[in-house]
Each structure stands twice: as C-alpha cells, then as structure tokens.
Image (cartoon, rainbow, N blue to C red; front, side, top):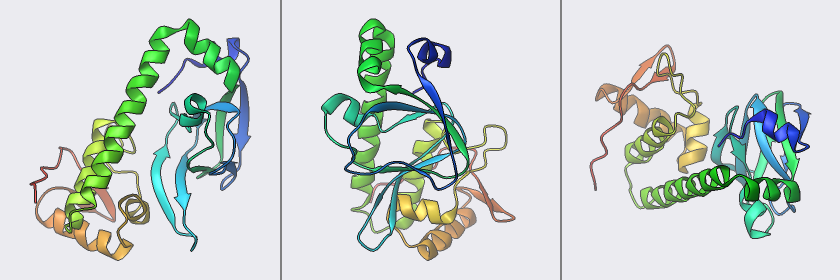
Length: 207
C-alpha cells in the first residue's frame, strides 16, 4: 500500500532516517504513527524467548507496515527493524485517520491490503500442516510473485536469503537449502551462483 508522498506531506507527515538494525517499534508498544517506507528495507518480525526471529514480511520501498494498531487500538503485534540504512515517512495516527475519512479510495485500498495479508496468514497456517518443506517454500514464493514483492522484475531473482526463507516458513535453514536444491532439480526454480530465480508460479500439489 503506497499513499502519495506529496499527499502525506500536505497532511503534515515527516521523514525519519533509520540506521541499519534500528528498531522502529517493538511488539507490545502503543501505536502513534502511520509508517511508509521510502528507501531501504525493513523486516517485520516476532522474536521468541530464545531470540529466534519469525519474519512476517520484508518491507520494500513504497509499502506501509504495522497498520493494525491504527484501526483496532491494540498495541503492535510484531516488531519492525531496519534491515539496512533506510528512510521512512510517518504521519501521526489521528491525522492519518482523518486522511482516510476524506479519501475513501485510500480507505478501501487499506481494506483490500489487510484482507490480502489475512488470506496469506491463513495460507501460512495451512502450510504448517504439511510435512513437505517444498510446499511451504513454494507457497511463500508464489505469494511474493503475486504481490510483486522481494523479486527483481527484470531477471526474476528472489531477493531473500535462505535464512530469511527459513524464518518465514518455520523451517531450519539446512532444510531450506536442501529443499530448494530439490526444487531446482525438478525445474521449479533455478539456482545459479547461489542466487535463486523463479520465472513462473510453482504448482503446489495438495497433500
């Protein structure tokens, strides 16, 4: 979801620079701003008691993140951390809600965005019932291609590390490496010089 930056600025939004690994907000923290990434990357995660990360999304420029507390008055359900030096634009929550009231098209777009994310989360939960790691990985890749996220549009390169895919699917990184090699051997994706390419959607055969 991308709101025109000039529109945000006209409503009083401000830029904020982030250093790599800087925390934007923590899980459980109250929400005061709408956040939209201008440049860089942000990972949106939960961290368990042992410090392991569960990645919900790698946010790219033009995307918003952490929207749920803007609407339900609850605290953040996940933590947002700058993956690299980044720039975001943010708007105070009450002003953002007024912006939505005066721009029904943007409000409707947010409804669609949150619905797509909920559908994706349901698909993730469903995939956990499968003991086939290839199916979990294929589901993630197909979703990212559908959303035009974390892929290079020109060369179809997947811009995620094996560790990030493991953190998204709940698999061990060694399992991801082995499963993706099997997918390469079956022609579902291409691995060249350590980089992963996927031109087409991957057929997922039900268990």
